[in-house]
Image (tube, rainbow, N blue to C red; front, side, top):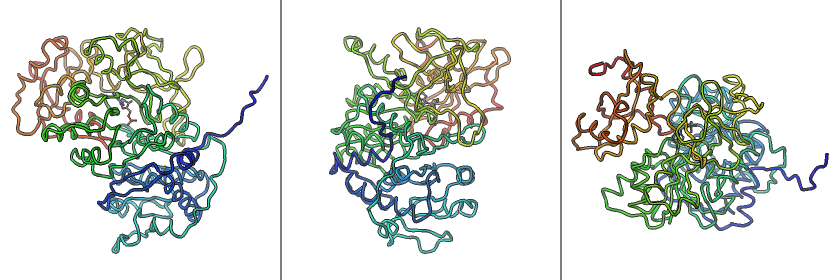
Amino acid sequence: MLHGLMMQTPLLISSLITHAERFHPDAQIVSRRVEGDIHRTTYRETHARARRLANALQALHVSRGDRVATLAWNGYRHFELYFAVSGSGAVLHTLNPRLHPEQLAWIVNHAEDKVVCFDLSFLPIVEAIAPLCPTVKTWVAMADKGRMPANTKAQLACYEDLLEQHSERFAWPEFDENLASSLCYTSGTTGNPKGVLYSHRSTVLHTLAAALPDALNLSARDVILPVVPMFHVNAWGLPYVAPMVGAKLVFPGGQLDGKSLYGLFETENVTVSAGVPTVWQGLLAHTESNNLKFSTMNRTVIGGSACPPAMLRQFQDKYGVQVLHAWGMTEMSPLGTVGTLKSKHLTMGHEQQLAVQYKQGRSVFGVDMKIVGDDGRDLPWDGTAFGDLLVRGPWIVREYFKGEGGNPLRVDDAGLQWFPTGDVATIDADGYMQITDRSKDVIKSGGEWISSIEIENIAVSHPAVAMAACIAIRHPKWDERPLLVVMKKPGVELGKDEMLRHYEGKIAKWQIPDDVAFVESIPLGATGKMLKAKLREQFKNYTLPNP
Ligand code: AMP
């Protein structure tokens, strides 16, 4: 055996902010605060405040491996916590404030959080859950002294007070890169939420890969506005990538409506953003109705659920904003694939290029993938065969926190371990993966599968449709048939017949939904995805016409 003779510097999250301070001290971090104003800081100042915070955490008796939770929007204090907590060897646990307080209390108790830092807007949640969370020793309001709530039942510490009381002299400790750095619970549509415990190594490797040109393509010349919340898989890694490349960061706080976002895009010269399709729908509705264009934004990452082709086309063809269609999951840190073109696509026609981009994309180096049939055997990469999508790599979960749910991995004939994503997909000869469905959402009609995503994509390409979900309804002959649930845009006319006519010529006749149900709203989950389980419950006694 002969070992290489290179330094074994551990891959640690603290190195990202140290690097940013040394090489990009003046790059800006701009936040729309919950207080309502715009706040500006730099990597230099952020690093200093993160070190103060690390001292403060020590004073609060936070030790290595202890969990420090956040209940916060995207903003500079949340960003400081990303580095102060993980950098000092504790574990940053980002809580999703959109969850029900009971669910939140369950998660806090499961994680055994010791400290919870929260934005003032979430005080009512803190008051509701504090009596249910005995492991939490300190609740920290992320505010300055002047804004501390006066009449509250909860015992609170003041974030700015803590920073003021502690010195910025702090040396980030060096430790094993495999130690835990942050914790994020999966959306958990079934069963209890499960914790995915990232390590410093997995995070830094993911950060390096995410910045690559064929991934999110980020650099020191970018101004990044992550709309995706920092409590949703670490804002897809952007708070780590930005200091690594030295990009300016813009945090939108809790104002995620189209008007507020557009305002920030323009005033801060944002070049790139990232979020789920439902957010972009709000933004595009605003730009459309006010006849606006983007002055500096040239690309946006869309993922979390399938980007409807109509949205991709609108962004690119009408606004000149390149769409990076990305796929991943909490268990994957989250990045798995991104839909960027290869050189051979550049000479193709516009429509053919779009067809490539509609897919979820090809693997970012570090993520290996394959599709398998029911028998566990590999399926061909021909763009047609579809099966369970399996992944493996250094930033993919091996086991859930506290062993919840047992061993999630599958072992193949070669003895390799794979994580089953729960998604059903095709992969083509060029390696582009396309999700046809979540395995539990797929509609099985007469032994054939209908992709609910494809049905939804066609529905939202109709100008009168705001949002659409396709779910399976039991059928005596075909087992299941598709029902299309549609939320119309305000003030427009659309009937069932016209909706169904819109499918003609676009898909096979037997795949066209049997019926259309118009609803006032479609339930969305805590990360902005349509809650199909809820819809299935809502329509469980529904009978299709002429079954
Ligand atoms: P989460 O862990 O909450 O981020 O959810 C991960 C799941 O979201 C994946 O397993 C997919 O089912 C879905 N998902 C994420 N990105 C996409 C995408 N671009 N297209 C379709 N589904 C997606």
